[in-house]
Image 1: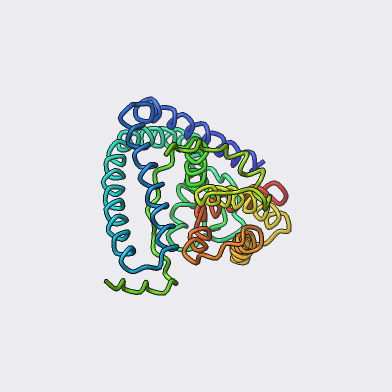
Image 2 (image 1 turned 90 degrees about the vertical axis):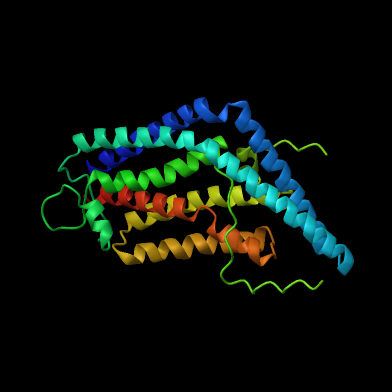
Length: 186
Length: 113
């Protein structure tokens, strides 16, 4: 049954992600260095949120200028703290990379040339290379292990990190539809 | 100023439709993430069971998940900040897309292959 093979790959991926998060915890997350860095970021973020809230309440120009400087200063500190934390996380990236490569090799051997499942859509362009890897024939709805594994990895890792609270701090991306902010008058 | 302890994600999720419950922005984003995953799984299963084949499946995904998030933050949370709305709309999008595809594939293969 095709669904069982997909489920097998899914569960193996989940187990692997949990294992690599465990290793990451051992190497990075439990260290005092990391804990301090994270607490620092949380504190700065709270300060920043508070200042931004205050700014929206205050309409006075003179006070506004002063608050803006404080906000910029804290944002700068946040940037530095985030950079330091990212450096710590590089160690965990190795753990993740190794476990993913090992798992991929293992699954690759088991499912070499095997049609794992039938796709309910025809993958576009470059995705065909992934989904049809090692499979003979030209029916592109046939799907290899590679595609399933790639998809599983994407949501499993994100969600596990969110559950365990190990997700990296988010960088704010600009809202493409927002009106450009009015330049602040001083 | 002491930091308030982080509340359990399960607690937050249980209260996600409780209008009397007070959320921080971070907690709202977390809730939207998880609700989106749940909606994506359900849509994937439905789309796979019908079955919808091809591009329309992805259209259904976009309509239902983005529609759900939009309704959730306007009707339930009553958020007015445009920047935050956009942030919530993006929250968990890639995860939910991939989990939708897996649900779709599993449902489709269980019933039709």
